[in-house]
Image (cartoon, one colour):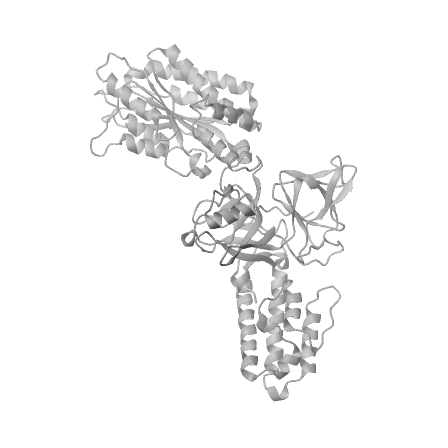
Length: 616
């Protein structure tokens, strides 16, 4: 069976299927003239029979299906929709009604360029849309458009509303969306962070940034002990395999041959034994004057390692001397902190999760003449700009080992909870503020929770067609198959030929025009009972049958009788308008973006989003 594996956008974004049907399966038609569709709210399955015990096929979230007659049915196993995937399907399958959301339209909308309006917000109710427009109160926001100027996101029109704004009537839509819509390209992956994505993809990425000069030998050995302990923990929690990743950056003195060196990156450090081998390879030495290249090492760890896009990111800086700072060409404290924790919106979850929490352990002698400066620098690093880390001063290896092991073990707990979907446990610690070193992950989880979107990322809300300042926020589109668009193009061409032959008012014949409309209707091969064509039948009616959508241009709402009596100038304007529409459609067929659904390869079953303004 062909599968339709396309994702909505949401920030969410979505591809929408509304083809014409000619197969043996009768489909449920909605009051809007579209085929009823259901969208998977979460990861679920379709079943051979209407019960969950029968043979199943997995269904991804936001995968969608066409509903067969008679529609939703109550069976012994609960309520199910009979669904199909294509217009020539030979099999009906069943999807649980509780896992599906009905979508009865065929329209979608694309957001206008951000430079022309305010940020698009998804709201909880129509009353919130009114508050948003009138600026008379705080609207309840449940989501925001995806970030990035180049992100294209299509959203399905679930329902359309007209709202009195005083001087004018505004339009609002109910839609489905994801937290951060995916790209408009069918099959694209989500562009931001959801609970589901955290559970599936998140790693704990820890970069050790070690002073590699001669005085650090015993603490490098202590770090090996930490890694051995973590390795034992991973062996007892197999779900954490490949979820804990280490990297190693060594820094030395400015005068040493290679003052900063990446010894092990995360790809290799995913295996604890590989990371221990990297630690074994360190040859301590150098460090002529007291200050080291600690800040350059920390900056390298923040900017040059292969961090996982979905990771809880931590850098542990370990050293016993302060850093070179202030001289021309040397890295500053400010540069390191900005690289680690850039300032982003609290709703930009993709930006928040990229923040790196820096922990610093000063392991030098407090009697050292540079100890005050060293403590000051290490404390500033740990303080950060947004997400404070752990600062500790110690010169005992055992104390060092215990502190670092506890720090990593706590962060491993985050990964384990999120992997099994226990976000409640993590959220409780965030709310209680009992775990101050969680890093950016806490802000990300709170951001998702504040969006009021279910852990699976499926959201439903309202969006306004204009912002409070009257700027358009959406561009209406409709999904049309190559087959429908080609048929419409051929019909327009046929009409132009017919009417050009009747250009002279003195020779126009109603019967000839009627016969031409009849021939056009027959050539469409609609595989359904054809309506009668007579002198009072409008061009719009025949064109609507060809396209599968209402024709909105009143110029085409003319019958053969009206055409016969039409003045020459009006007749020419009609023919020119038909020809312009035909050329626009032909251009889209030639250069527009079409895509296949599922495994379908036949060109006539490819689809495209077409702007409503480009249709007559």
